[in-house]
Length: 328
Image 1 (spheres, rainbow, N blue to C red):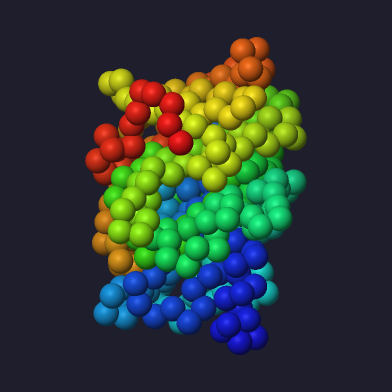
Image 2 (image 1 turned 120 degrees about the horizontal axis):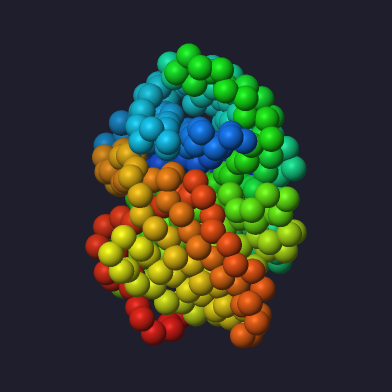
C-alpha cells in the first residue's frame, strides 16, 4: 500500500498510524491504561515514535506505574517500529499494541492482555473521531483520538517480577499525533466508579494555535450505561474552568445537559512529551487522582459519582485556559 493511500486511510481511521512519509517534526503515540480488579496496580503504557526537526528519530515505550509514582522510558530503533497500513496494529520490538491485544516484553513488564468489550468513540458523518471536523484540518499542532472509552481486561502480567492477574480489570486507550503537545492543557480520565455500571469520563482542555492566533479548545466524553454524552468546541457547547488549591473545577453544557467535574490533584511522575517532534518536554501525570462528577438534564440530577484511579495532567500556564463564566 502506497504512502498516499495509507495517509488517506488513516484520516478515516484515527486509531491507526498517521505518520506515513513523515521524517521531521513529527510524533505519534498511543496511551494504554490498565488497572487490575483489585486496583492495586494502575499502569499507563505509551508506545510511540519521534522525529525531531533535524530528522533524528527513535521509537519508544513509556511506562507509568501510577500506584508507585514511577516512570520508565525505553528507547528503540526506528526500524523496530512496524505499524500496519491496514488498521491499528503496531509491533515495537517484541511488543505489540492493538485495540484487541497488548503484548509487553519490557524489563519491568511482561505478558499479554486481551481487550474485551471495547467501546470505540463513534464515527459520524464528517467526523471520523473525537476531533470532529478538525480531523480534516491539515495544520493542527496536535491531533487526538480515543481508541476505546471503556473496556474489560483479560490476562496476566509480570510486574517487576510479581505475577498480577488483570482479568476483570478495566482499561482505556487514546492517542495523539502531530508536531507538539499544546503549551498548556488540562486532561483527566477515569472509568472507575461504582460497580455494575458502565461509567467512563474523559476531558481535555487546551490552548490550540490557529491561523496566527489561538483558541481554547476542549473535547469531553462521558459514558453512562451505554450512552455517550459529548461536549466539544465543535458541537457548540460551552465551558467553565477554574482552580482552587489542589482541585481543578470543570463544567460543560449544551442546550440540554450540563456536566460538572472536580478533579483533585495527587502525586504522580514525570512523563516525556513531544516538542517539535522531539521527546524533549516533561509532563507530570498522576493515576491517583479522584474526579467527582455530576450530570444534569436541565436542572434534574441524572448521575453523581466519584471516579478513582483517575489520570490527571495540569500542564503549562493553565491560567490562560481558565474562565469563571461560560464561554465557547
